Image 1 (cartoon, rainbow, N blue to C red):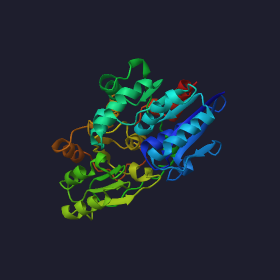
Image 2: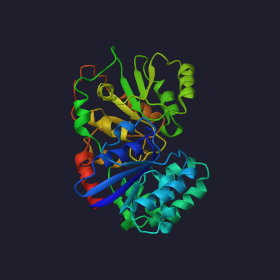
Image 3: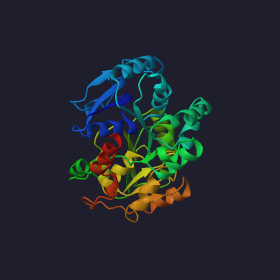
Image 4: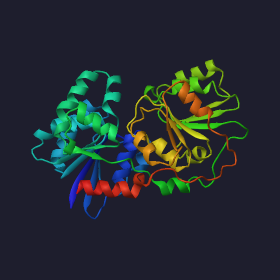
Amino acid sequence: MDRVVFVIPSYEIGGAQRVLLTLLGNVDRTRIAPELVVFDATGGLLPQVPDDVPVHDLGRPRLRAAIPSLFNTLRRLRPDTVFSTLGYVNLAILAMRPFLGFRPRVIIRESNTPSDSLPSLPYSGIISAAYRMLYRRADHVICQSEIMAQDLVQNFNVRPDQVVQLPNPVDVTAIREGIRNPVRAKGGGLRLVSAGHLIHQKAYDHLLDMFADLPTNSQMTIFGDGAERASLEAQIVKLGIADRVRLPGFVPDPWPEIAGADGFLMPSRWEGLPNAALEALVCGTPVIATPTTGGLVDVAAQAPDGAVTLVPFGAEFLKAMAALEPNPDMGKRPNLLPDDFALDRVAAAFNALLT
């Protein structure tokens, strides 16, 4: 039986962390013995950690402090495979790999398109150089889209034979069970939703500017929390749309309200493959997104006509929102997500990769 160690910095709520824990929970226990190494075992995703998985808490929230403990823990556990999915953790594991004293397979998952995401980081030039130098050490690099795969091969020295395209797993059954009774605010006009961290990447500042130009009977809810909450709240007041925009914070299962909306909005400046948009499609809610949302380009090619609309910021995005039709009596709509993203299919492919 193969021993596989999953490495995660914390249980902080985020798309990459959710994907790792979902994959961990669906590892084939007849062939694989999974263990989890976490820098700091705190955060809202703690309930998603499977009860049968041994957890090694390093008690070191910051990467710099965690590296010695991570190195010693991997040497002690001597797993057959190490798996991680956040760029800075990937780099740390690949940097220490030659010094571990044994040679595990290292499988990393990239969670964003690097050419889009890295320039926004401090010391972006150094980090980009580290990607080009260290990612070649991985046995496999998991990507969620053709765009991401091309970016890594063309700009970061990843070999084509290293790349494995694996979409994000979506628990279609759980979501469909959760939308038996869609929730929709009363009244006429469009009902729009979005979900994600309230941070620069998600471009909610642009979205609010565009939403302010819609008819005054339109309403929008943005699920999530983050560093830009205060500035977004101030912008909402300045635009005079406080009675039409809700920021309810993080909600574990926002699916009934997403299922009751006329459209799901994803205005991100960059993405890998946004889980929230995939879940919206499962709810039967059409998605309007920017072309920089990474893997949604692939999803749009497979999904039914009209399920995913990709348009740039500004007039075209506003036009796409305005073109939606209010439908207060929609009921439960059919799943719009292509079958390739279903949890069982993705989990089967991931288990095959691990073994």
